[in-house]
Amino acid sequence: MNMDNTEPPRVGAALQALRSSRGLSLDDLSKRAGVSKSMLSQIERNQANPTVAVVWRLANALGVDMGELLGSERAAAPAIETVPAHATPGLTSPDGLCKLRILGPIELAGQFEWYELSIQPGGVLDSQAHEPGSREHLSVLTGSLEVSAQGMTNKLKAGETARYAVDGPHTIRNNAKSAATALLVVLHP
Image (cartoon, rainbow, N blue to C red):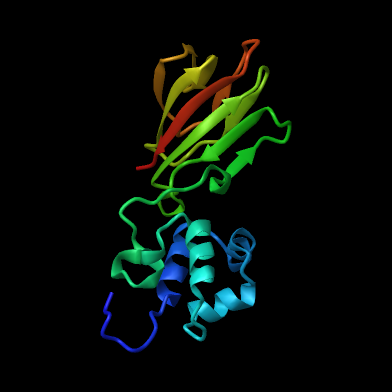
């Protein structure tokens, strides 16, 4: 940070980059930080300079040090980005028995995706074909799951991984009497 400058630090670009990298809208950040949406918008456009208290609230809401908002040119790309559990997007099947937490960044969707999969007893995750050459890697963490693809079915227990082509319909099913969790990685060609 340049201390010779008589102008206060402009945090707008850093704030906007950090907010965007976390997939947060102005409204989301406003609720997390307790700062009005209009104030956030003015800060991002460098039309307002926040107080130390506001910078502190924003930094806490974004999970960064205050210095990242106050002047580091690297603020837009922190060395380690932490995504809080509550900010991890997810999908739930209509019956509520299957849940996918989307662990991979949105910019890799359609190339390389990874998920935490939770399936309750009797739950079934049916998937349509992905593009030719796509593969899934299913690693069971707890419980047991059954995977069907390419006309074959395999049962997996905790600690086992199945790797299979997904350019046709495929299914992951929990036939056990207890819940199962797994990591699911999808590789697209």
